[in-house]
Length: 358
Image 1 (cartoon, helix red, strand yellow):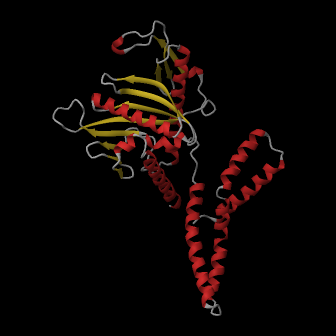
Image 2 (cartoon, rainbow, N blue to C red):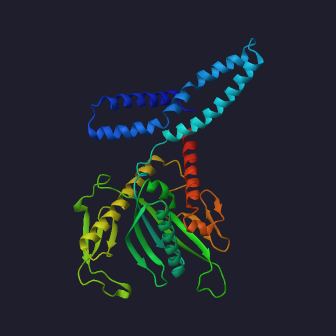
Image 3 (cartoon, rainbow, N blue to C red):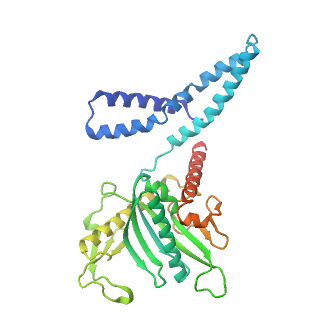
């Protein structure tokens, strides 16, 4: 049950915002902030009022049912209405609890996705390439913009590592549960005995941080420049265009050499560094908040095995919620991706609601 005081606060806040916004005496910055808050509250204000009046309506209907002088038809109507408002009350309560859950400020941000081949040699690099193609297809279907930041290809035509930024609406909230170890089970093209091999790739999804989210002091950075190298150590550039940026306090280092311009490489490197430092700070704060609670559906542990793609059986299984979809090809084409994400999001919300009730 949600405390009555919480519901009163929502209703009163909605009234205050309504009054402020219609006054015409708010500066532009505050007007935008309050308009957003008012818009969010508008989605649940009717439910908040219904929840608030539930006890009163329930008592009145119970009085009719207990009244010996009430005729049977009136009692039947009251009984049906009571059942209806009880059911509606349960649904409204869940909706309000979800609204009252602490918001993740990063959910509406764009994201940086990093995919690295793990155990399994060349087969792992091929799988890393398959995963990247899947995220490209998902981005295309959702009309997101995917921009390649850096890429390192393997001899087999797969990917050793790829980093990309994805821009659009609510990117991080959609992709954040992709972080972790993705495992593939299939017969490689090079396998002559028909044996199934197991390989893995690591995915990291980071909210893209703006300069306002995180201040990086220039004095904390060491920037080294060097010549970009191609496959087999050959030089691909005759100028010192490659950049390595090291954040001295954390020890985090980022190298960029994909662009011919040193300036562009530095800009891309800073984008990755800012995202990694922002995620590091978010993880620290999150750990302090939830020292006593380990979430089943994590978004940060890159060593956690989260999903298996089994080609012989045509299935993809998410181990965090024990969900198996026997539509592997569709999933890799981005067709069944939303079904998995919606199930993960719902499960994470249920987990948060349970912790709210405890």
